[in-house]
Image 1 (cartoon, rainbow, N blue to C red):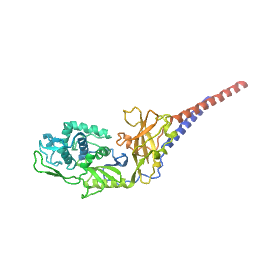
Image 2 (spheres, rainbow, N blue to C red):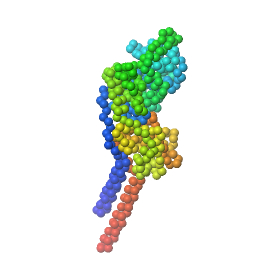
Image 3 (cartoon, one colour):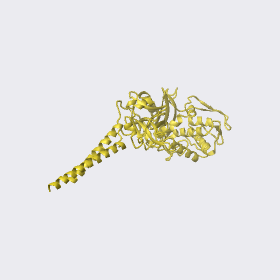
Image 4 (cartoon, helix red, strand yellow):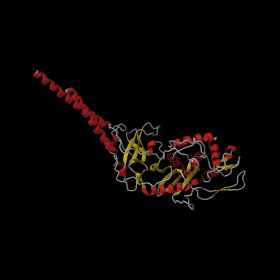
Length: 444
């Protein structure tokens, strides 16, 4: 009976110690949520997202991982791959398959079989006039064939962080196997709108003259379809680039890029019911982002107060190394009234980093109100110190998915101390038990 009581007592002590240690570590991930996440406007889009182009922080999310059809938003990927793989003065010759790929109702500039444009002219036709046959011709020029280019598109999409995207053509024509998400399009948009050559064409607000060619003597005048540019119906002064899309299956889609006071935002709306809604939703979301959030620079002095060696360094990830952090030109996004001291820190040791670096340890997420507002890689170098590098294009799922407000992690040092306490208690209990047995023998 006494032995059973002793066993139950030990088990209770063990449970209490482990629970206490867990609670101690939970306190490491609590957040000072003195300012709530700003209330976002209502949107009519089936799915939508607003991100900071520099940090990747998601400022607004509405079913952004829901499968949808991109329509002509596809052409930003076609344009980006063309710019990355070609010189502007290269000549594109249009095959019969490319020139005859359009059907009635498709966007096109009436390209003829065998007609030749430069890559630069083709890009203006692609991004301003959304010409489907030009997308096909560029795909053949860059990839050797349409199927070859599609392979490049899907590979590039994954590199840029797309999670649920599969391209099957270069223009966005309806196809069950040609799909994406608002989140994935935002990731592709980060790369596209950060490319100076791409943005210079996509942001063109005038009429582009495509002069005579080897088969056409009359010049073509190309104009963009972005109604948020100056002089258009939904003019928004901070909008610097966009790409529209529409098919019966996709509904009205739009990806847009805007700049204001050093903040760069990307907005994607999909499955809109009518043409006007996509512009009004986009403008409302841009205003929401610019008016409610600020970019906060992360410096060594600012961040030092957020780290405590007993809380963050004594763990399975760091061991007992002497750790220091460095943040070079890195930013996070916070609500206007929030402070840097309000953020929490979460080490994600499962995140994919630079696999070529044998010292890669983990990724550090900056958390505010349960949302990831910035991320940095964590590198332990040979001198047992840590340095941080800002990653503008994180491929990890965790870079944007909201993270739970508490993380139950048992610190290995606290666990060791706890086990030591339990062993000492067991020894004490054993000694007392032996003493009691001796007393009983003495009286028998």
